[in-house]
Length: 147
Image (tube, rainbow, N blue to C red; front, side, top):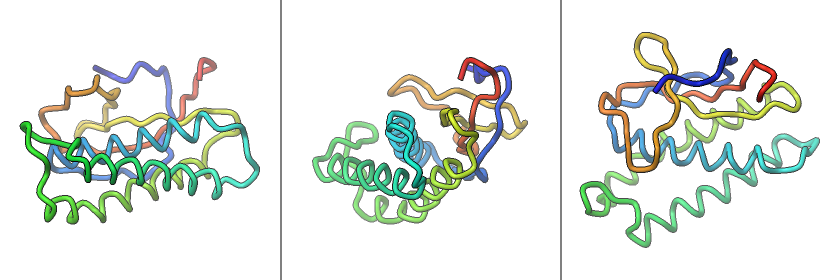
């Protein structure tokens, strides 16, 4: 599905993701942070807002992993694979934090995927992931009045 925004401003450097499982966990982390940030009352300290969101979302993500709730093909991800995702989690957190600091006051952030051809895609419904996972995870803000 193409992104249903008339015009967007890309606020983050693209994060290249090469496998579906990594796309799933990075997108979930980014969406959690964006949802928490967008839901907060405006605070003058953008760093505090993003730091709180990152901490809350990482704690939830780590607890879900520890509880065996993050799975692929019905099996929990191996611990070694999970640990290798740490740089991706750091990149994702940094992208959301950077996007928040660049956003236009009053506009909400959105998570999107950028395909190889540059087109943007909305996030899928839970459990439905993009088959060609070689996409970029990006953070955008809506440029139209319906943000």
